[in-house]
Image (tube, rainbow, N blue to C red):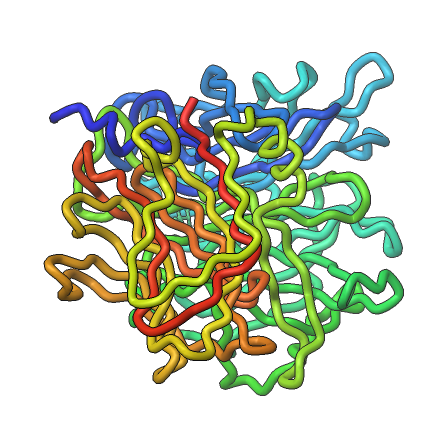
Amino acid sequence: SVPTPQWRPVYHFTPKKNWTNDPNGLIYLNGVYHLYYQHNPFENKWGHMSWGHATSKDLLHWQHLPVAIPEMVGKDTTTWIFSGSAVWDEHNTSGFGKNGKGPIVAIYTADQPKQQKESQFIAYSNDGGLSYTNYTANPVVDLHKKDFRDPSVIWLPEQRYWLMTVAVPHEHKVQFYSSSNLKEWTLLSEFGDQGDTRKIWECPSLTPLPVDGDQTRKKWLLMVSSGNPDAATGMQYFVGDFDGKTFKNDYPADNKQFVDYGPTFYAAIPYNHLPGNRQTMLGWLMPFKTDTWPWRGQMSIARDLMLKQTGEGVKLYQQPSAVLYPALDKLPAAKKMVKQSLTVEDKVIPLNTTRQFNGNANWIEAEFAVGAAAETGFKLAQKNGNGTVVGYNTQRNELYVSQEENGQLTGHLQKLTVQPVDGKIKLQVLLDKSSLEVFVNDGAYVLTTLIFPDKDATGLAVYAKGKAQVNNLKGWDLMP
Ligand code: FRU
């Protein structure tokens, strides 16, 4: 194994050492964002699943903490701690609290390979989420199935009960359960066999959201990780109504909608207990074949979730979380770039210097008035004119991300059809060493991928074939 520091993100979470997959138990408490994550504490590959733990105050810088819930190895049973969620049981409905204080309760899937069984377990913490004690009467939900996993639990304030959304992967369905104490759960209903059923369903979540910010117009977002074979992996979403018992899809059963159009974004879940009805998620960026060492796997940027009314119904929009921008604004002037207006005509205009924006940890935003250009966009991780292109082709109305060598697109091309809004394409491009997240038109579409540039391939440029007007260009260099 060869160390790969050139590919270690600086503003996205990676474990200090070894493997991660899904984010787990995302919860905001006392000004701190907790991130638990599927972790192998011993090797740089999947296995020995445990809940790793890190915390952050700004969702940009993470502090590593000891494993919070380790695997349990017994004589006849090995229990791996699969994905799940964490809630703040403020009123001590579970009775696990101490000294009049409510506990944090983790609800996770116990995967028992020898028994070929998955069931839902709970564990509680009275030390602010550092360590957990397993409930002695686990499991709390058990269908005696091999595949039954990824409970996501929220508090329903109107109904005054806990709601669990959990997947039965091979049946392409989710189940909803309610509980007054997190220990006893009652099946409410099931939803499934709709949308994309080409791959198994995992890591579901159900989230209330206002439409267009109107708190009196609530819809429910049901997200499910289910591989999209066209994109290698994928997440889909449904929008509908939830009356506390049953989810009713707004769209026809065969309608498919995707959270991200790239090949790596998976297993995202929202934070619990955020102030002001904010809903923010983290997803896992699934590694490609290229090895990274001594860690493998990373998280996405924190993304705010929004629902907007469009001509085709209510749709999901995502933005890099609004709480990240104040931290960006605090960066020193040299690490910020602002260009009101730039005319780019048949040119590649470098945006980096030898000292700034040359470390592949760049966050760049701009609006492209695409009118007279055949093509326009950004070039990233460049060396001798070769590297990655995030481009918009006006003839085909196509946003694409690709490798480019000697003027030719090479490697795997990711693309999606996007119409300009008022003649403009807005791009927010987050490059962090090996991850690349592209938010299009205020997050109507997001395309996330991984790239593995050479250490010195760090050129950054804006380009156009034909004439493009680039407005409100802003950049932040996040190299420490
Ligand atoms: C998704 C997943 C989950 C499971 C976890 C195990 O990536 O397969 O369904 O809980 O990973 O690590």
